[in-house]
Image (cartoon, rainbow, N blue to C red; front, side):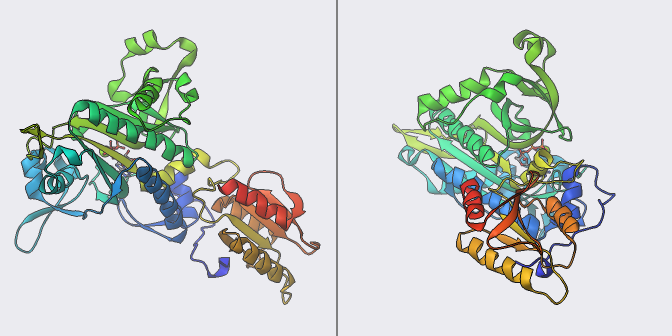
Length: 441
Ligand code: ATP
Ligand code: MG
């Protein structure tokens, strides 16, 4: 892709309407465009990143055996009346009437709809467990949409739902998602801590929020620092192992505001490990038993009896993660972004110095680009006539993790190469390919 042909509308300065770095950067490099309060269009650069995040989220859902479906954004009010949440959900729900005067709504979450799908299809306990997920737009009429796509009204979410025969099996499902979330955030190069959380309007009694530390986060958190050291690498998908894994985290005090209790905090956490700070919630998992299955009559036959299924739900803010990664990785002072290569919009930038009427450097750039592409890498060539320093400044903002410079003195197949934010070195193109490919896996 040539920069001059790309749709990456970069602004000269930080937009004044944005107060946090992710919002500033996303507007500055043209990742998103606000269309109305809390509602955004995703432009190519932002959309590429979000799609890559979505892919990782999907792979980690599939890996624990969850099956993907797609439910609509528009739901009927009937099922929400059955569960009793139509009134309870309040003003965050966008309620609409169709031409027949029927009450419909733009889904803020999908517990009711999935329960309805389940009850009409699954009759026997032998079909359990069922783990289903979808990745779909949600609408919540937030009182104060702010921080760009971090708290907006229309956002992209992965939500999953589990159905089991009893508590024990249901907790096993819960723990599978717990593991899949740890894996997901790790692949996004984020350190997200699972914290005990309130269940809020979803209901139920077991819940964890996954939070990444950031000064600009909206959640106040209280934690034992040792939770950051817990390893989750060797987890295996069996009951006992997953229980152990969750216990390794749960043994440390880690809670959000609503669950905070100063006496507990002081008693359970030695002073040197106490950390009270702010964070961004990127995921939330709940176990709520038969809260929906009972009023909505979702049951299976089990030993001649009717059993209401035990359910959990599991959300990841796919679009919020784009902003959360920026909050975690953007160096505001030096204006350098560094996307984890797993989600970077491009793997490598090629920055040739272009002299008027001389295509030598650009020709080289195209050749290198073809070689990188052959190796499965995604490349952006800066074919503008800007000088090196403004090209580098621009690519530092774009956050493409690697840069190859092609100047007039460049000879043979040795190029100036840098991993963003790190000193450059002169190495051969083959070495460059190897370095990037190694980072990519
Ligand atoms: P919050 O406390 O931030 O309002 P929530 O508890 O209401 O979040 P859930 O219902 O658990 O959120 O939704 C799952 C995930 O969806 C959240 O962890 C978050 O990452 C994302 N999310 C929720 N609300 C928004 C929003 N208004 N804008 C963007 N992402 C959101
Ligand atoms: Mg909310």
